[in-house]
Image (cartoon, rainbow, N blue to C red; front, side, top):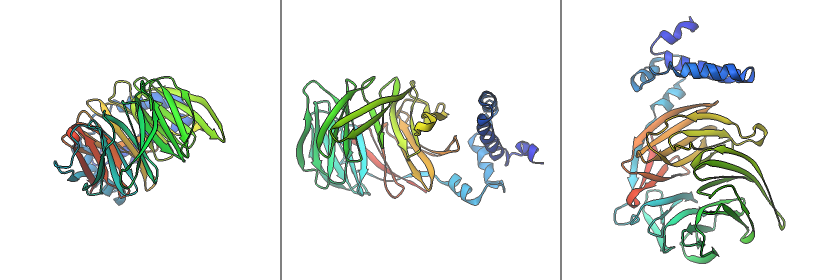
Length: 365
């Protein structure tokens, strides 16, 4: 009998997952009942430890493709040689045009092949690099020295300052649709389009992290995520705040449909829709996603599935799959270092950077 399958040990995890999905769907009928029922069933999921979940491999109701995904694990495939690594902590990683670029507290930028062989490096700033961004031709960096600088993407040859303000710390860069966005320690967001400065706007709090999706800008520091509509049309910069929600850095887009950030205590992960029509509603919250503060999030969409990677002070890299408002962890790995940055390659590989300049590549097998 289907209603009694929850008592069968091998069938219980899948049965309860489907039941949770049905409860979530019920919110379209009665949101209060859906919320209350979901809260109650969470109290009965204590049995879902690693051993019991593993028995799901013997559940004939689970598709073979889903079982293959359950079997996937994370492993370190290669790492940067000690002779080539940064001297201090990694602060930023980006993957662009088949190469990995890293910035660190030593003020240097380095370029790496996919197998983490060093290709180029430059001394970009006298102080710590906070963030990197890139288009197909140029790489940008920012620092506490008050500058945003440009470099040739392939060779890291300096091209000069984009901006220099003595009393400003630029914390975060993002490049999207021919526009460079730079956020600073005073909450000012400056925008360049095709190399021309278009203007700035003052947001609610300093900009520690940022992501841009079309004309929507997501910014955050320690207390609130601010969602702002920004339009760069001709010579006019138009903007208006869409929403704020409680949260802190880090923040990441997950494909085109979702975005995620950390809770104010830094240990939960909160996922929202990237959709103005639904008012950017919350779709899931991963409570106690990590035992210590989360420093890095990176999201993507693989085969129409929303995938999120997270890590931080606990040195554990975790992979999450988001499906119909349900988030499930599908892999974890002790990377042996405090993680500050995560970048995702174009062949399913994950790059992780952290303490003492170490960078590793992680494969899903």
